[in-house]
Length: 265
Image (cartoon, rainbow, N blue to C red; front, side):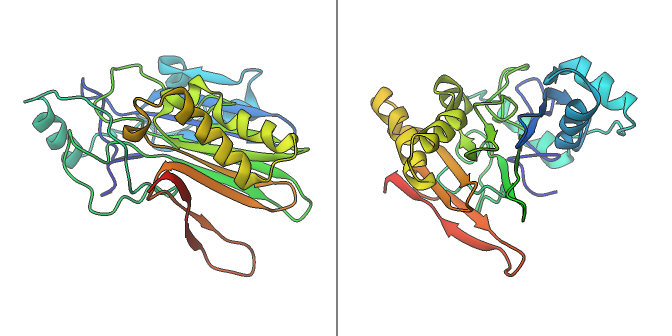
């Protein structure tokens, strides 16, 4: 695993622990999530079990791990030798400043990724789907920001922030600095703007610009992006910074990598 911005090989927190977050939701408002989950390689699968097997929406930390093991998920060491070396190099300076990741992708690919402490220290996998019957679903997962405080949880596992699906309207997911998405209930906001009549594209733009207007002094150093899908199949995407791309495919085509528009060029 060479991608250090998300998943199994993701960079750890400042204490050397790799923890993963994930959420999943369908068009019937059923949802499941896990946060600060360690030692399990596929948190989105555990989130689905939370949806299917429990009366709860979210399990966190040791409780999430206990549930995952009870469900038969193997316990693994997620800190790879490369990530461990990067963490030990970071410990020499312990510089922590989340910087806008200008080359994000909803598939987690970060070209020319640099070493710890500078850029490209986080990413997100967000997926929205629409089937032939018009049923929507979505998923969102991440390892969060590199060198975060242990126990930090971003937007990805939070229904309404990193992911929201409304079977009557559409779905949205987010990437970027999770704290800003949480403060604005970002994905829920995008879907509600669609409910009010905005297209997925305009809804993503308004949600991003609301963050920019509220945080003008720091917006140029932040990255937040939204991806939206309507029940009719229309797609929208917008980010604060350039470089946010997403992939689109259907039964008749291979993935199309599409650059999203942005507030700042």
